[in-house]
Every structure is written in C-alpha cells, then in structure tokens.
Amino acid sequence: MLLLALGAGARAADAPVGSTHLTVPGDTASRGEASNRLNVAVWYPAAAGTAMQPMAVGPPQTPYFLEGEAANDVAIAGTPARFPFIVVSHGTGGTTMDLDWLCAGLAARGYIVASVDHPGNNALEPATVAGTTLWWMRAGDLSHVIDGLLATARFGSRIDSTRIGAMGFSLGGYSVLAIAGARANPHLLDAYCARKPETPACSGVATPDIPDVGAQAHALAARDPQYRAAAAANADSHRDPRVKAVFSIAPALGPAILPESLESIAIPVAFVAGMRDPILPVADNVVPDALAIPNAELTLFAAPVGHYTFLPDCTPAGREKLAQICGDSGPERIAVHQATIELARSFFLRALGAAGR
Image 1 (cartoon, one colour):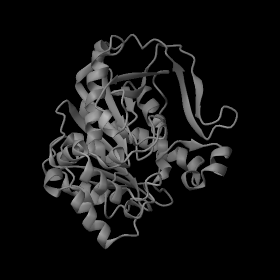
Image 2 (image 1 turned 45 degrees about the horizontal axis):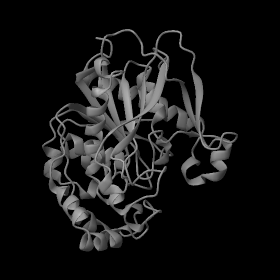
Image 3 (image 1 turned 90 degrees about the horizontal axis):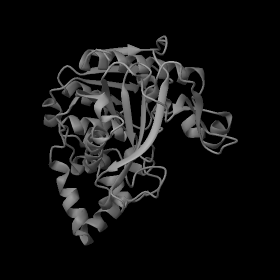
Image 4 (image 1 turned 90 degrees about the vertical axis):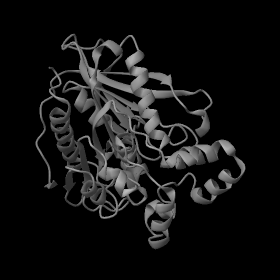
C-alpha cells in the first residue's frame, strides 16, 4: 500500500517514560570490540506520577540534540503485567539515541523499547572495517538484545515474548529487514555502484570514517580468516522468528538485497521515508523493498523531508556544528517525528495487538 503523508497531529502520551542503560552478551569481538558485550538503551512505561527530565546529547552546556523527556532508572509501570517489546537498530555511525524520540514515544504508549550500539559502527568508538561491512551481523545484535532483556530480572518478566517487533533507521532499516528474513549480497551492491558511483552509498559519503572501505574490506578478507568466515555468512538467513513485525525508516542497501528474500518475508512490514532523500534515493531503496514484500505498507513524506529528518531535533549549537544533519531541524522535523510515532504505534497495534491487553 502506497501512502503519501505530509504530517499528522500528535497523540497525547499515555504514560511517563523511564529510561536506563545496560549491557548484554553479544558477538562483538569480530568487529573490534573485545568485551563481547553490547551497549543497550531501554525506554519503558514508568509508574504514574513519575517526574521526567529533558534529555539532550552533546557538550553539557551546549548540547547538539534535543532528546525529549524521560526519568532515569525509575520504576516500571505496575500494569499491565506484560508489555510488547520493540528492538531498535541505528544507522551507520549512529548510537542508541538516534531514534530516542521514537523509542520514548512508543514507551509512552505502552511498549518496552531497547536500542543497541552496533559494534564497530557507532559514534562512540572508532569505526572498523568489519563493523561497517558485515551488515548482516547487526541482525544478530538485535537477537542478542532480545535474549539479554528476556534474561534480566528487571524486564524479563514484564515483556510479552509473543509480541516482539523491530524498528530501525538507514542501515538499521536494513538490519530489521534482515531479522525479518531479507538477505543481502555485497556483489549486488558492487554492481549498483559501478552503475551509480556518485550515490552516497558508493562514493564514501555514507562512510566518512572509512572512505575506502571497499578496498580495505577486500584486503582484510585476503589476510584474515575470521573476517572471511563472517563475510561468507552474508548469504545466510538471519531471521529471528520471535520478531513478529518490522518498522523500517529510510532503509539502506536496497540494491544489495536479494529480491526473492524480500518476497519470502511473511510478517507485517511498514516503511517510512522522505520522498527527496538525497542519501538513499527512494527509487533504489525503500520503494523496491516495499513493492517486493507481500502486503508491505509504505509512507513517503513529501519534500523537504530528507534522510536526516528522522534524527533527533537539533539545538542552535547543533545547527551550527552539524549543518548537514540539522539543516531541516525545527517545527517541520518535530511534526514528522510526531507523525512517525503515530504511524509506528498504529502499525504495531495492528501487528502485535493492544499494548495493554
């Protein structure tokens, strides 16, 4: 179903939001993180009457991003007994906070939401070739987050393990498709880049920390058997059957995904993107994905909504320091965020059932 959304009204939050950070076991060493622990941020419905504080990211006196409101490490709401659970994947070089506006928005509406920092491909540590190119391992990170949260004393008994969804942005938008069953082939991306070398996914703009990442990946594969083995798993399915629905925002790697794997996805999938996305052109990415997946939903926001519109709103300091990311920050970005929260809430309501059932 193809929709065109120019904006939507905000829905009042149902509950205060709590937030916390924790780590869970995960396969990180192959991507440059020796701890084999994944960093996770969790948002959840807090007990009634909880006082929240503004969240921001950046230097303490001049933060770059406004992150909404939450209360740190407070009690989870007493009812219902169990909540649906959403795992979240950030984009290239992002962090758990990239979709905090959406995570907090869903937590306020009755979901436990957990976002992970993908090893070797986040803003908190140096990028690695393995973390940047072994895309399919991100789906495994999400599965480890599900395992880890279900095993915690704090959240395990409060999560309804029959109602688990996933959502992601940019490369994270691909990650959640991978956990739904999509499979990518790097050779397909190579062929695409040979035809369209100027696109950000091919020119190095999308991977500024490792601009020659393709050449470095080939060199690493030649000398490192562990990397070769991990790279060979790109053709495997990384489907996690516990995930029952996927919400993908401006997904990357459309040209690399095997069409037959999209056609085989059997769970509900919804897509959101900006019509004029200059980083991941919709005609090469989200539109073919949506057309290939049976009964997928697609919402395209009209111009000037672009790729970075889906990152948090920026402060004046952010707009000065991060002009490319913050160029459309302000009321229009906030309106798109509110509309996207409602699209995600409505989608997961239909796909997973009522949050408070």
